[in-house]
Structures are given as structure tokens and as C-alpha cells.
Amino acid sequence: MGLLIKGGEVVTAEGRSRSDIYIEDETITAIGRSLCVAPGTEEMDAAGKLIFPGFIDPHVHIHLPFMATFAKDTHATASQAALIGGTTTFIEMCCPSRSEDALEGYQLWKQKADGASACDYAFHMAVTRYDDATEAQLREIVRDGTASFKIFLAYKNFFGVNDEEMFHTLKLAAELGVITTAHCENAELVTQLQRQLLAAGKTGSEWHEPSRPEAVETEGTGRFATFLEQTGAAGYVVHLSCAPALRAAVAAKLRGVRLYVESVVPHFLLDKSYAEREGVEGMKHVMSPPLRHKQNQYALWDALQAGLIDTVGTDHCPFDVEQKLLGKDNFTQIPNGIPGIEDRVNLMYTFGVKHGALDIHRFVDALSTRPAKIFGLFPRKGTIAPGSDADLVIYDTEYRGLISAATQHMANDYNGFEGFPIEGRPAAVMVRGKVQVRDGEFVGEPGRGRMLRREPQYGAHKVAQEADADAR
Ligand code: URP
Ligand code: ZN
Ligand code: ZN
Image (cartoon, rainbow, N blue to C red; front, top):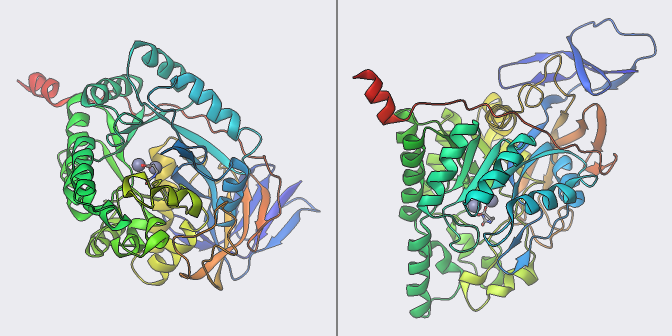
């Protein structure tokens, strides 16, 4: 039996139109006015609402053993919170540590999500060590449909890889046609700066940013781009936070490096003064790269509107107050991360689209279409078109509310955006034709989400020297 969504205004990355959407089973089969549908077709009224393609969060942490503890959400809680906020697909970082087996880690992350996630999902496979055995496992993981890697240039001795390992990871990625996402901070500089600050008695959360200054991220971003250039691999900088790192990334794009850029909601809306607050209030706002001087936000918004920042994720990484207090005497032990999977769409709609910083089509592009395209999910996800999955967000632009930990669905006891006003929220959210959310409440089927298997799509790209040699 089909479902007809009537009277809404369909908004995609390309355009907008007042159209009805006809869904059969899990798939959109027709879009238009006065559609011919079978007698008895169920109808859903979307008059006065916008209809967006389901949003895709390209960077989340759910199961995460990190900094002597575990992130708080389960796949059940995080996925339901995601859906309530309009995110119908997330891509989770699968992060076994350097001392663990990559394939065992991958199986563990898959097991945790399977039957628990209420929305669809995929993984980026973290490469936290590179040796022959790991290489063979990575080939198997890509064959299983996980067509993106993750490397950390930061977090020395835990998730971090050295330059030799980065080189071999990128060579393999180029050979297999997968894209590599990267956390770009210089690990050695972070270690040395942390030591200096602690030795000088500077132990509070306000010292987190000075221990990882903009130059440390800019160097990491530039180095990652250079390694992409020399290996011919495609790459994606995660959670870019500041103008100098942005300039390094854009310079690489301009010289033809296949490099995409993500920034995350905290870097658009929060600044380093939040981490400078007294006691645990500051600790709640410790993440890496750190919240920066507010000045950077103007550059990030402009680059987002221009498409130089390709995507907006959350880097959802929930640690509660008790966990944050692990670092009360030493900022280097504050678990890094801020939750956000529930609030990304509403915050970016409010502070981007409603406040005039972001065109509505670029908003859809950055939060849905481009993540789908970059990570091999398009056109199944990321658009509203016949043949696409019926992942839809029917959006109420009249809603007014405030972000609050008291009403959130993420499994955490604080919200880094506490008190931020929201001008719009999903009235209904559908995953593959089934309504999972209505007016801020999960009403659907827990565990309905599926793992999305993806094909490698970044075929061989000649490295600079080979191209030069060919030209000669
Ligand atoms: O502070 C952060 N970003 N925590 C999560 C781990 C990471 O670096 O993405
Ligand atoms: Zn990171
Ligand atoms: Zn992250």
C-alpha cells in the first residue's frame, strides 16, 4: 500500500517546489502535483511544512572507548535522538585503539549497531596502526561495504598514526578507491605544549585551547593535504575549526588535491570562552580541535555558504559531567567531546538559514546531499527523487523552543548548547517510508536501521610526479 504526502514544499540542494510525494514500500516512486494514486492510498498532510531529504551526519561517535572511559550513548539512544532532530543516517567512526585488532573492532562496532539503531548508518573504519596484517583486514572491511577510512594525526599512542603509517594508509586507500577522513592536529606539538603548560601549573580547561593552537591544526591539515597529493588518494578533513586551517585546505583544493572539508556545529556556534568558564562548565566544552576565538566563525560561515566547507557534521561525542570531572585537576585528562547528534539540523537551520548566513539549498547540500555524494550514498540517500529511499523530514518552521538537557533524548546530563533558541524542528521524520518521529517524540520501530554498504568511488588519480613525468 502506498503513501501520499500532500501539500508540502519540497526543498532539495537544487531547488524547491510545491509537490506531492508518492511512496511505495521504502522508496519514493513519484513526485508532482495531482499524482494518480491507487484507491485507498494513505495520505499525510504536509501543508505549510517544508520537506527536506533525510539529513546525514557524516561524523559521530557512539561506541567509543576513549580517554579512560566510554562515550555515553548506545546505538538505540543516539539513533532515536538523531531521528528526533531530523538525521536519518549517521556515519560512525569505528575506532579500535592502536593496540587492538582492526577486524575484531569492526565486528564489534557492527554488532553494537545491528538491531539497535533506529536509523540507517554506515562506518568510517579507523586505521590506528598500519602493518601487513592490518592491511589485509582493511581490504576485507572495504569488501564488506565500508568504503572510507579514518586516521588521527592527533592522540599519539592511542588512535594516532605516524607519517609512515599515514603514507601507507593513503597508498592503500588510493589503490582501493576509498576516501580517507582525517583528524588533523600535530600530535607531537600537542604533547610538548601540554607538558609545558602543566609544568607551569596551568591545569584548568581554559588551557586546552592554548595546548592545541590554530597553528597545530593548520600544520596537520597542510601535511594531510601534501600526503594526499603525493599518494593520489582522496581525503576529507574532519571538524575543521579555524581560518588558518581553512586556508590550508582551500589552497590544497585549488591546486587540485581531492580534499573535502567538514566543520562541525560547535565550531560554528561556540567559541573558546565556553571552555574558559569556571569548573565543570568549562570542561563540558572541551573538544579537539578546541573551540576557537570567535573571529574564526565568520570565516567558517562564509566558507560554508561558498561551498568551500563541504559538509557540516556534529562529531557527536557524549561524556557526562562525572566523566568530564576526570580532568578536574589536569585538562589533558578531560574526555574530549561534545554531544550534538540531536541538535545539528535545528541549530544550523536557526543560526544559518533563519539568520541569513546560509542559503536553504546549501543547508540541505551541506547536511544531506554532499555527505551522501562524498561517502557513496547518493542518490539512494541525500535527495528527494524517484528511486531514492523515502527518508524525509517534514519540517515545521513555526516551532519555537530552547535547547535543554532536561528535554533532550541523547543519553547525557548536559547539553553544550543549553538555552540556545530554536526556530524550527521536524514535525515528522520518515526512514525508508516509515514514520519514526512525530513532533519531538520517537514513535517508530527501534532497531529498524540498516547498515548501508558502500562501493569505493575514488578511482586512481595520478600523483603529481607521475603526471609531470607523463607530460615530459
Ligand atoms: O573532541 C573530540 N573531537 N572528541 C571525539 C574524538 C575526535 O577527535 O573526533
Ligand atoms: Zn577528531
Ligand atoms: Zn570525531
